[in-house]
Image 1 (tube, helix red, strand yellow):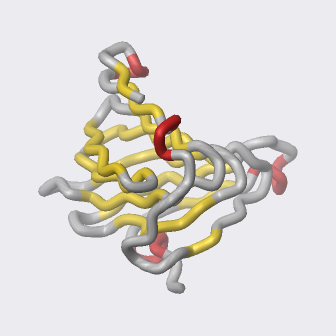
Image 2 (cartoon, rainbow, N blue to C red; image 1 turned 60 degrees about the vertical axis):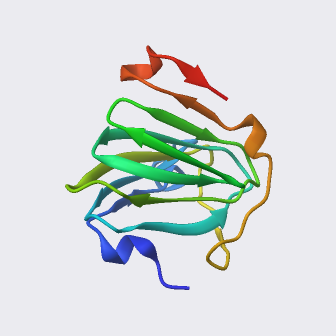
Length: 130
């Protein structure tokens, strides 16, 4: 499956290459762009810095805007798309020194989405829903 990062201005950082225990993507995506369904054997935390994203978390859809934080448990099918009219700027933090991704067919669901968390508001200061 093609890398969704190729369709946006995304920077990848793998912690293992620099003595770190976490990895991340800095995503800068046009409207309609994002990441197709996939899983990781570790949690992933998304920090929405600007724009509007729609996340697939197992069988749930969650909209997130600037200041929201979305936490995806290990082995949970997830993905996202920029559903806003402007750029989507987000940070995707992988709780691993090296990123491991299993890409799935579009529309795939599954995993422990019930324990996925969303904190609305700057730095999670707003309401939280799980």
